[in-house]
Structures are given as structure tokens and as C-alpha cells.
Length: 355
Image (cartoon, rainbow, N blue to C red):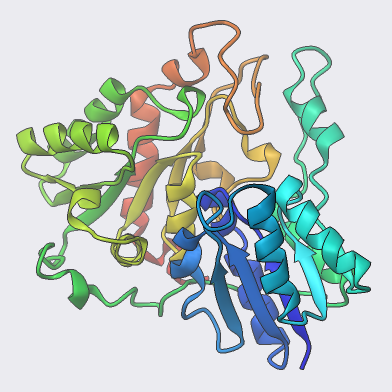
């Protein structure tokens, strides 16, 4: 049996973007054994994805830290006798690992990150504002090079009715008839990717004021973020800090699958909601959908952004604002976000479920 190794270590959103493509690969090549190598957090994406998909978690901060750790990991991988290696990451770690396979005569292919086009997209002068190939396109191209052309028809990690909500009932009350569930993921790794928290709170308060049947679920990561969400939820009865109640990524995915809409930055939560077929109102500042990181099957009409000559200034949003005012986020009108959320809720969950 052919055995393909797929490497993608981080970040969470980027790993999530591999899921639709790996799912399609597994279905279209049922006799191909696929092993996904990533950080341990990603297990939830692949555990039940397909019978011929297995997951291998690599703790790069401890067990496989540094060059000695990579050598140990490489030996472990070599023992599995892979027939091909798909490097979906193309960073130093993955390059070193795939090089060992290349020396052994194993077919290897790696992702094209279109670095020149990215530089043109984010340039201050002579900016070339046009869509780049998406990450999904890039992953498909890697597989094609290895002899596995793929056409992805992925819809969701869960059945059409969503994930098994019974596992959450001890902490979250079931959805009532006519109730609208809205997810809010207000944070991201970098300031240039975050809508001001004060403005987002007003967005939530307005959504609640305009519809008594709205219930809001907040999603966040670090402890500082959770503290802010706790404080907000404590003073607004219709708001629940979901991330405080849920124990693991799988549970968050289940809850997201029952939302009518998710509001998210250009962050992992945008991709998590996309994997469970929930429409996302995404908010873009320093980054841009043209860089190719839009969520799976998400619609451009739901991407909230403003036209500024300096946008995008970064592919990943990690550069400080050279204007120092983060106008790309601050100037986005709260009413624009509210209107887009209401439009999706009004259309009902059939907005995406009917695809």
C-alpha cells in the first residue's frame, strides 16, 4: 500500500486549511494510507476524518526540540517507509525532514508560497492588488506533483445537522425554537488583525438590542483574552464565554457547527467555523483575502474591509502599522458588521447548508 506523509506544523488556521484537501484526497484514493504530521493540537481535525488518514503529533518544543529533536523525529519517520512526502509548510524544519527522504530516493514535493507575488501585494509603492492562489490551491498543486490530482468537495467535519451537541448539554443549554446563535471571535495573534475590542462590544450589544432571540457565544484563546470575555459576559446576560466552558477544540467545533453565523478576524476561528460549514463574517485589516487565506467556501461579500492605499501591508498581520493608527481596522463602521451579520441570520443556516 502506498503511504503518503503530509507535513504542516503550524499555525492552527493554516493546519485547518489542509483539512478539505486531505479529506478529498482520502476519499478519492481510498487505498492510499495518509499520515498527517503536525503539532499535537491538530489531532481534533484528523482523528475521524477518514479511515485511511492517521495523525502523528510532534511536540517541537520538548520531545523534538532543536536539531537533535529533528534527527530523532526523522528517524521515527524513516521507519514508517513512506512512499511519498508532501511538504505543505516549507519551513526549515520541514525542509530538513523532507531532505532526508529525498536522499533516500522517496518522491518529495513542497508548497509554492508565491513569495514574489506576496511582496508585490504588500508593497507600499507599486502595489499589485490581485488575488494570489489560495492555500487550498497550493496544497492541491503539491499533491498533483506527487501523482495525486484532487478535486475537493468537502462540506463539513460533521453531518448536515451539526456535531453531537449532547456532549455540551451539561454546560450549554440547547438551542430554543427561533433562537439565533451568533459566535464572536474578537481576537487574533497581531494588533493589525484585530477590530478594536470596545467597538466589537458595541456591535454585540446592538445585535442583542435589535433581537431578543439572539444568543452570543464568545471565543478566545489566551488567559488575558478570556478575562476580557469573562468581564463582558458577566454584565450581559445574553452573552456566554464559550471558550471558558469548553475543554477542547473538538467541543468548540461542535458548538460552532450549531451557530447561525460566526464573526471572526483573519484568525484560526474563521477557519474552524469554515470546517463545520458555518458562514463567517470576517474582518480584515492589515491582511487581505487576496493573500489566499480566506476560509473554506466563505464568500467575499462577507469579508468586511475598507479600501486604503496601504492595505494590505502584511501577509500575516505581524508588522507594526507604519501609520501608527491602525486605520484599516479602526475606520471600519460597526453598522457595516451588524448589517452583514443580520443579512446572514435572516437568510437562515440554509445559506451554506444547501451547497
